[in-house]
Length: 375
Image 1 (cartoon, rainbow, N blue to C red):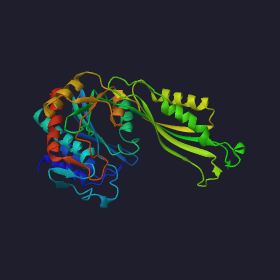
Image 2: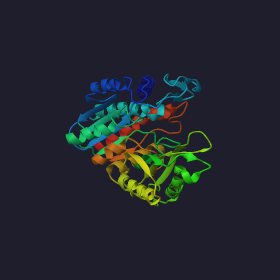
Image 3: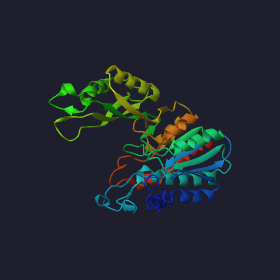
Image 4: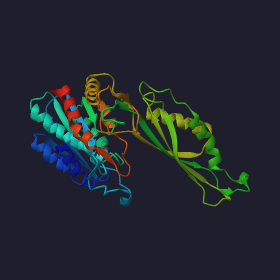
C-alpha cells in the first residue's frame, strides 16, 4: 500500500463532518513536525485550522485544503460504510475520498518528499487546512486570512487541492472562481380572503414582475475565461396552506454567481434598484460569500500548465467554472491561486470515490509544482 493511500484511509476513518476535524489535523501535524515543519493550531469557535511552514522568507507557496466533509446521508444507501475506507476494483470509496482527503494526504506526502530532497529550498512552503470549508466558512480560512493580514503574512502562490479534474487527472486547471452573493428576502403584503383581493395586497403578485425582470436580465457577456454572471432563485415560500387565503408575506432565497465585472456591493445595489422600481415593501439580508478572483499569466499558472501537461499528456483546459473554494479568501491577500485535484465526478454523492491510480499519482503532481517554483 502506498503512503498516500494509507494516509487517505486514515483520514477517511475519522468522521470529520463539518466543522468537526475529528483528529485529522493532529495526525497531519505529527507527520509534518517530524519532517521539520513548524506547526501552529488556530482554533476559532468550533473550527480547527492548521498552519504548517518550512523555510523562511519569500516567495511563499501555500498548499490549501480542508479536512471536513459533508454529511454522508443515510448510511444504508452506500455500498460500504462511508467512514470505512474500502477498495473495490482499483477505486477507494469513502466520504472525503475525492473532496478532499485524498488531496490533503497527497499534500502531506509531497511536502515530506520535497523538504527531504530540498532542505535548503528557497522561500517558504506551507500547508493550510481548515475544518470549516464545507460549512459556514466563517471561522476557517476566512478567519485565518484576517490573522495573516494582521501579522503581515504574505502569500505569493496558492495551490488548492479541490477536485478539479473532469474525466482524467490533470485535464483541467482552475485559474479563478466566480464570486457568490446570496439573499434572503421577505416581501410584505396584506393578508386577506381570495374573494376580496381589493382588501388585501398579494406579495406574490407584487414580487413576480420584479423577479421576472431579474431572471431575464443579461448581466454581462462573461469575463475572459469566466462565464456570464447568473442569478438563480432557489426557494420561494408563502401562504398558510389554505387555498382561500391571500398570504401576508413572501419569502424568497436567491443567489448570484458573478465574474470580475461586478462586486457584491454593486450587485446588491442593482437588485435593490429593481425592487424599489416595482414599489415592493421588503426586507433583505445579503450574505457575501466571496468576491471573484482570477490568476493571470505568471509563474504559478505557467508551472501548473507544464506540470499538468506532463501528467495528462495534453495541455489542461483552463477554467474559472464551478462553485467556490477557500482560495477566495487567500486571493485578496495578493496571492496567485490555482486549483488542482482529482476527478470530481462523485463529490458530495453516495459512494464518493477516487481512483487509486490517480491518488498514487497526485503527490507527484504537487511535488513537481513545488520543484518548479521553489527548488
